[in-house]
Length: 384
Image (cartoon, rainbow, N blue to C red; front, side, top):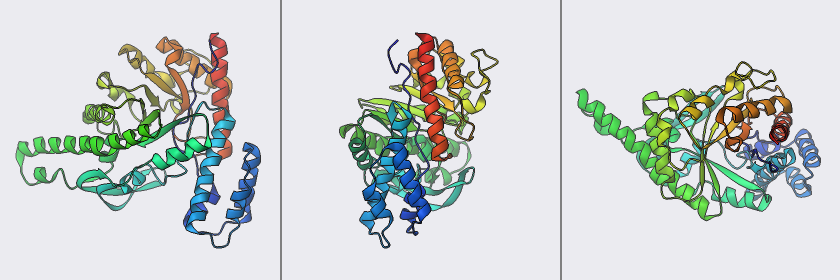
C-alpha cells in the first residue's frame, strides 16, 4: 500500500486570529495579539517581520488591513501543512461567513436582518427579490492567493445552491403562488421553489465554479448544510447539485453536516459527478478503541452507502469539532479501519474533521488535525 493512501483534508473553516479580527474591525491591536502572531510564526516556521510591522501601525491603511488578512491565510495554510494534512485550504480567512459572503457578491438579494444559525452564531438573512446573478466572482482572488502560498493541492469550498435558497426568503419566485388560492397555489409554490433553487444553481453556483476551474482549481467542495432540512426536498437538493456541476470538468464533492443522513437515500443514487460525500460522524461515535459495530456506532450510516452501492468516496468525519477532547491517533485509526471494513474498499475513505474547526482554538485544532494525519498513517500500516 502506497504512502498517503488515505487522503486527509480539512472541511472549511478555522478560527480567525485575534489580530486579523481586530484589524478588520478597526480596533487597536495589543501586545497579546502580537505575541500570538510571534508564537505561531515560530511554531509554523513563518517569517513574519512584515506582518509584525503592520500590526504595530497606529493608523493602518485599507491596504495594510488587506495585507493583514492575507497574512491570516499564510498562517492558516501553514497550520494545516505543519499538521501534515494532504489537501489544504486557508480556513475561510478571506471570508466573513459562508452565506452572507456569497449573497453579498450576487445580484437579486436584499438583506433583511440577523437570524440565528446554531450555537451563538448568527447570519444576515437575505430575501431574493429578483433573478440571481453574479455581481463579482466569489472565490477566484482567494484561489490565486492560496496558489501563491502553497504547493499542496487546494480544495475550495463553495456554498451550495440549495442552502443559499433555503436560508433566504423568497419574495420573487413565490409571488404568483401567493396571489392565488386552493390546490393550484400549492402546485405553483412547488414550481416556484424549484425554479428558485435551480436558478441559484445555474446562475450563481455553476458560473462561480466554472471561473474557479478556469483559474486552476481542481477540487471544489459544495457545502450543503441545509440538504436534509426539508425531507420532501432532498431530491431537489440532488437536482441542484447536478445542475451546479453540469457540463463542468473537475472534481466535485459535497459536504453535509449535522443532518439525518438516512434521508439522503435512495435519492443520492441520482447524484451525478459527485466524487465524495463529506459527513459529520465522529461526534455520534464512542471514544473507545475497536472496530466492532458496538465500538463504532457513529459510522452506522456507512452501511446505507454500501447497500445502495454508492461508489463515491466518503469524507470520513473522524474529529469532533464541538469538543476540545483530543482524539488519539489510535482512535482515529480504528474509525478509519471500521469504515474501510464496512465499505469494503479503503480507497473510498478520506479522513476529515466532522466540519469546520472554527469552533476550536488553533492549539486544539492543530492537535486534532495532527492526530487525524497520524491516525490515517496508522490505518495504512495496519492494512499493509
